[in-house]
Image (cartoon, rainbow, N blue to C red; front, side, top):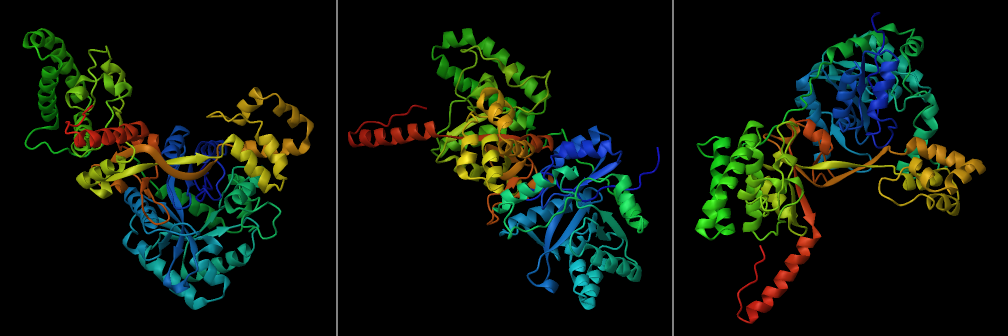
Length: 587
């Protein structure tokens, strides 16, 4: 096999929720089809797609390069923001990249999105390789202004802190000032001995995707496509060009191509996936396994005394409970999950002790006698013939997963308690992503294309409002849709464009109930995403990816029914207290 001549080092997926169009798997598939040995995905201030990208890359025989694009501010340029691409060369670099991203969100942000201070790179420089940001970087902007003193100051910073790890980025996508910058950058590189690198600043897979990309950006920015005020920041040339195309494009600067391959060789990050890491539950001098056995046996004694007040009956029934408990404890300890049960036991007991209504248990977790003994659930699985194996099966290694219902009003108190117990930097909720769904994408595309509201509304109303509805399903369910699609060219164009955007990641939110508790800082496992005020952190990996990355998910579900029951009990007991009656307890 011939030596590769070019690798894409700056690519956005749809997790760049401003301007990325393609999902990680199709990007990897395209790179594989082009015969490329490696690929970098550098979404804007996030690693949301990393786990999927890492898995897809290795599955396709492509080396995944971990990186991100940033908006950067520094005192030299005042309030002006510049661009920078940061790649992780090794696991230390990956950790520093994670910290940079998290720090950008944790300090809050405005309309421009999260921003890093250039000085943060001093402390977090180890294991990182920088691409200068082309004409939008600090060096690029200074070159275009002809400010040689500012150029020298910027270059001196990178020479000091990133020797042999800072590359002047060269881009040729037909946008304003690219060639002016490129010639100035090449001269600077020769004068200062700086390496150059070629990228195509990729935003979509094929050149034919440009119109869909522009509509995606216009949806985000709130413009119509024909609005003269709409910013035109992208070009049809920002697709995943082949090696041949890039070699032809940069035939006059061959070292810029060769350096893409060299950088790809230098980037070697190993992401640990498929392992589980739990915080250490306090057990005194005992092992976690022995402590679980002790607490479960003590709890079973209490449960049996309650279930069978008659001692003779208890002695008669106890063997089946003892046998079941022993079997479950063996499985739990063999699979390495005693800590999980103890953690859940503790926060449920805290909730009950602090007046937070807790559900009796639902889902497969109600089939565990150990859970019943630990008062995680309040259902006797033997009485109802519930199977433990549905919850935890040694033949199928997966994390146990208790769905725990809390009063909706007081659920956050439990999460606060967990954060206090294990450390605020070790506890986080989980991100969830909103995508462009069938009905909404028709409305959004119609608006951006400038169609009248009534025209778009008529099409949108033909799409059934069922959960999980797609345009393909809608065409099968509603006969009028294919009819108007074939009869009206404007309808056809709108729906065809909507199909290209359907399912694209649109925004980020917070998972309804998922909370992860790490043995160390969350950022040792995943970067953080915060709201604009820098509060309410969530992991940047979604619920499936965060577990694959090693963090264990606990479900803290807010249930309004429990809240209503709690209100009713408070009202009843207030009246009973007036009448001198004891409070009603339905626990």
